[in-house]
Length: 438
Image (cartoon, rainbow, N blue to C red; front, side):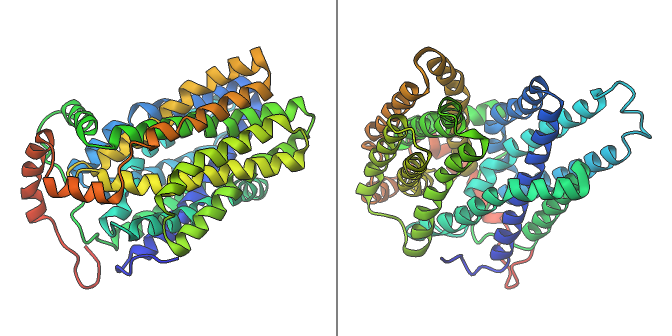
């Protein structure tokens, strides 16, 4: 596993990993308190975070390209540190502030506010953070660096709920929020100490946000391989994420596994992904044919999960789903980044993130209806079919030779104007000093 030896970059990765852990802790804390009040409250609180996450992603991409990828990330981190610190203070002073006078109403409002602010910051920041490593590396080194960063993120996401439970027990919900505020502060400090070797303000600020969004959508349609990559991400998210989030719990109820065993089965998806991610971080990306084989392996695991009711075999099945999915994504995501026009880094990343989020939001109620009508096992087989169908758009994703040929031929006409507009910002963009500081 290796990371670029740019001053400050490894400190940023460490701080970003810590922030992911803090976010997992606070997410658990919010969910724990909300579900303790009632199921309707939990749905309301989670919806408060999902709305801005889905609605502001493209705006976040345009803002990052125009304002600066690193600058936007710092702004979001500082804002979230302040918001989480304020939430911790409000909860600590809940009674003196009179928030308990109407029963749980004040607590519900505070949780919804935290969820909404978190979703807003995540929507604005996610396109920038997703593309930030590309400012340091590209080509054959990109899959390994992305896998290394993703590996640490997956590890802390596994540890997050357990750490959240312990911290909530020790310090309460307000304490968990305070720890998350500290983690955001550390990321902001780390980002202030690292300057990418490539310009992070890649687009001109003229024109409306909507024109910036429209230009990125048009460029995505006309850039070879991008539409196919986005369709593949939609199919993967619609099948795999809904399987883990809804189908596995439904099967657990139907097969009387209990909450504990069902949780272990769900976690096996992450375990399978960790195995492949570690291999990629160590040895680099798999060959192209493994990207096509991934949906086949994942679909086989989904079918095994549907047909065999034992929890032990189900764990193996979900591991296969995680292995197959990660075999594909560790190759697909770096290729998508390589296809991205240099003036639309965050905007294309926003399209990628939105494809995943929208697919999950749409497929979740559809899967719920299938489970009610056909049963969880049959619905899981349907998901296996959707996952297997991912091979079709994957077959249209270009290889590295095609990407190189497209780059040499120059950008599409729709992108050319944006490229020329960005040239001035590139020529005046600050470069790395010997210390890596701004």
